Image 1 (spheres, helix red, strand yellow):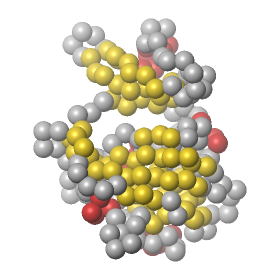
Image 2 (spheres, rainbow, N blue to C red; image 1 turned 180 degrees about the vertical axis):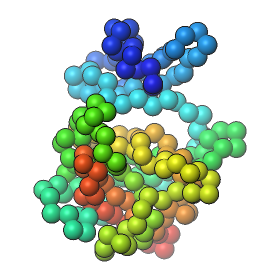
Image 3 (cartoon, one colour; image 1 turned 90 degrees about the vertical axis):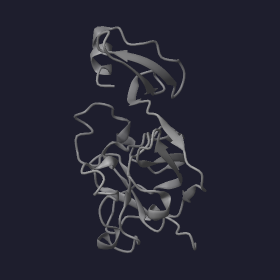
Image 4 (tube, one colour; image 1 turned 180 degrees about the horizontal axis):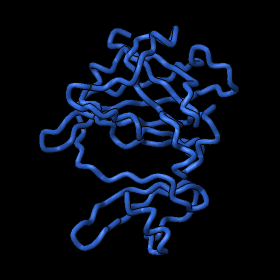
Length: 211
């Protein structure tokens, strides 16, 4: 995906499917020594706005977790009211790699319309347009929500940094988020949605096994 911008500027980008919110596979190369399969998302005008390298993940057995009870983030006074469903599912990198989660956003509304932006400058704020699992167990207060949740002993860098929504796509599966944890650890935590400035606008409590 690092080569996508250069290929577009050079006019040699692969042909994308036409129509609204097309999904296309591209063979992005940087010389004969490297070739990586990637998936590219385009908007309704055919302009690519997201790219993810296809990773060798395998499905994990177990039930999905569905989150739909959204509320305004504590202290948020803006005009966005998030609605819709996020489904979380466990996957694991093949060959004995770490655990990760797939997040599928379905029929989402109330998202920040400014998050249609695709340029790096517009998305430069930390957590811009993000959808992230947080460590806290309650949306009752900002302190209770806590920060991003992953196995910090297994990975020092925040795997949630690249998890972003697009407000014009009614159903979107995000690339796997390598948290190093299974859904058994994520159940009972919180899920937070951000606007383009990185501000927290909505929160939902992830159902625990007893819920």
